Amino acid sequence: MKKKINPLFATLAIPLVVVVASAILLISRGNASGNAQPIPPAEVLRESPETLRGNVYTLQCVVEQQLAYDATKGRILAVKYWGGNGRAAVFVPVSIGQNFEVGQRYTMRVRVNDDTLFVEELEKF
Image (cartoon, rainbow, N blue to C red; front, side):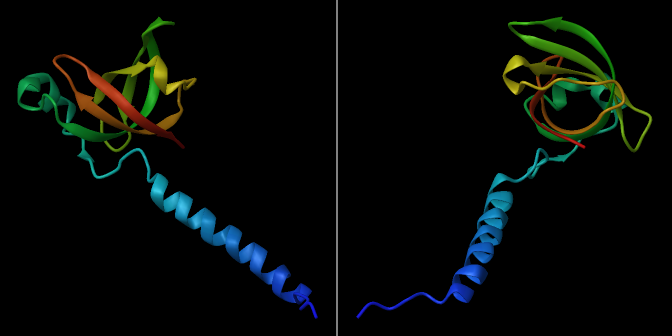
C-alpha cells in the first residue's frame, strides 16, 4: 500500500523551501561593502595616498562623468561622495561588466593602489 502525500503539505512546503533558499543566497552573497571601512575624506586621499596604499574601503558615490574608456582594460569615472562634498576618480576594470549612467548611485568596494582607486566590486542603487 502506497502512502499519498497530502496536497496541502506540498502547497505549503514548496514556498517555504523557496524562501529559505533565497534567504541563504542573499546572506551568502553579501554586498559590495563587505567588511570594508568607509573611505576617508577626499583630502586625506590627496594629501597622503601612500599611507592608504593597499587598503580596501567602501565608497558610496554618484557617477558624475566618464573620464576615459578602453574596451580591453576598463574605464575611469569621476564620482562624488554621497554624504559629503568629496570627489574622486575610480578605475572600473572591464571584468566588472557594468554600464554607468551619470547620476546613478553605487556602493563600491575600492582598493587604494599607487595613484588609483581600483573598483573590486560594486552594487547599484
